[in-house]
Length: 442
View 1 (spheres, rainbow, N blue to C red):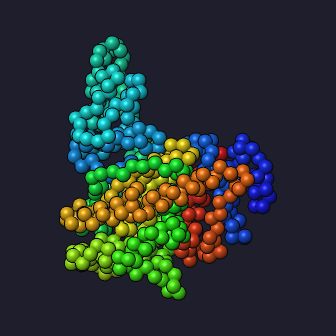
View 2: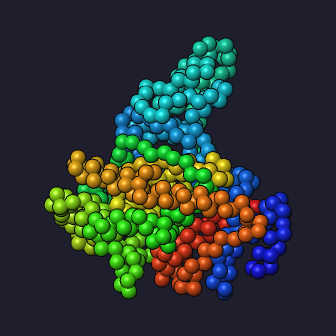
View 3: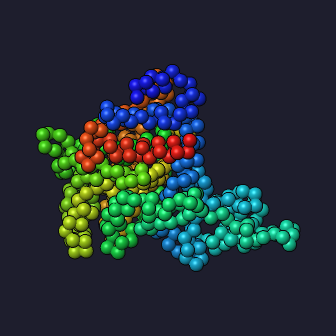
């Protein structure tokens, strides 16, 4: 490893690009795991990620609750492509490229709504909600061989869902979504079990913001509990002042630490005792005494439906779940669905939504949204701190030639089963999968 590190220091950009195996170095004998900082600043590496990660992995497109009724649609950019996520007139969920087959213009320019069909403003071609071509001015000019059936909107090669979370894949030969999600399904189930009917919904309203940093840094940050004490000291003080006991034995901050887990296929999670004041947990002081009875009733319903052990799993633990490559489900003080997409090596667009049980009362929903905004929101306690940290790191990577390595070796001497959430074993899970895909393509 030392020889490769020394050799890379003297190489030009082009020379380093030729050997992707040198971007991530792992020496188990020395308990060392390093990531070359070039992977955060290179245009060539990002282009390769588009080709071998975003084109071949299952990418989140939306939640079924966002398109409840026939004709409901959402337009969004997924894996660099403009897409229409909709429910057609027969109730089937569709994911179609938002690209007119005629001359390539966007067919639907609204962000969301309900429509009987989609209209291309360029030449007036119109399409049914299932994507089929309905009509267009003067189509007879194309002659008798014009095949109307072959001129519909292009469907995503694969569209599948798990517990109403919908994903698309541009590789028609990809493994099933169920197989791809692997151990992540267990943690999605814990989230959905909050609902008595098993039906969660995206709450109206979307948060959108940019981070001037590489997209992979938000993967790391989402499950990096090592940074909490320093980066989020303001939040820790707020929770302590609100009556939550943030102490640990031996004078350390935070309750007993949880685990970082490898869920397979690059997915990972933190799995912690709850310290975030969740609306379904016993830690209710941040919501005031007036919420106590309501929260006790929520817990009683969980116990009656799931049993004491499963109810405790749902209510008394929290998790930040990463579904490779770019979806995070934060199940902490609220449930946040966060998706992020690279724009350039040093810029990503982040979109996040609050998720909650369909049965929630107005007061319960208000508590959930309060938690969503005050912790995970772009103006909350956590996100501005995280954005500042990631952007500071991205600025530092300009010196990648002179200072080329990030060290992700924390806890590496331990077995995988003994990794804590403050160790970096679960983060190494992401990087091993990233490296495998990038090398396989090479």
